[in-house]
Length: 291
Image (cartoon, rainbow, N blue to C red; front, top):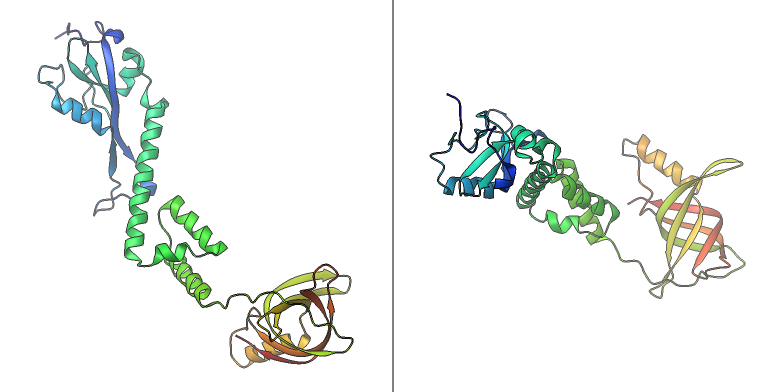
């Protein structure tokens, strides 16, 4: 039977209606919201619009179902709730909203985008809170003052989760930093025109390309005996790499140089710019203690 009510397409007057809000459901597979059978579950948005519709008298609407368009009768996933100036509350699908009701279609509008963004963020935060609850101390570990910890913290905020390896790395860095000996105050490089005994620990290494080939350089911290320490820069002695090969050939893992303790005789030349920084010249009689 042909319709002739005020809400049918031929009688519909957009100016007589007020848009309450958009509503619908969104499937976001990448957020991994699934049921026990692995089916991706939908996320609803526009709760206010749906509650408003449910609280209104809609029994005499052309189509009293919330997800059935009161203009064309088709069921829909994305739509909106409208209120007529006479008080009728109806629901309209996205296609009719654009073609008849004059309301921008959700597939092209900002409302759907905002809803997806809000749901994604909500699910992300739910996953994040669940991960922090399942890994006691992870939040504190992620706030360790270390560049990798900062990267991991940015990752969990961006994705809402971390892999098992990333969680283990966060705890390892936090433990290492907690056990790290604080840097000693800076002191002046010993000045001597003779070779002197140097005892210190490698802070880091860097590969340097020269006209004679590749050279591995090291920065070491040398305690001065008065609670201060100076820093020295120079090439890694060949005895250090020989010691690494010896450990490896004996069936051990290749030793790391960072933290390795060295003792050797060498000339030291202070920097012209910084009295607490110097350069190592021709180290000999080298002893090595790997961490």
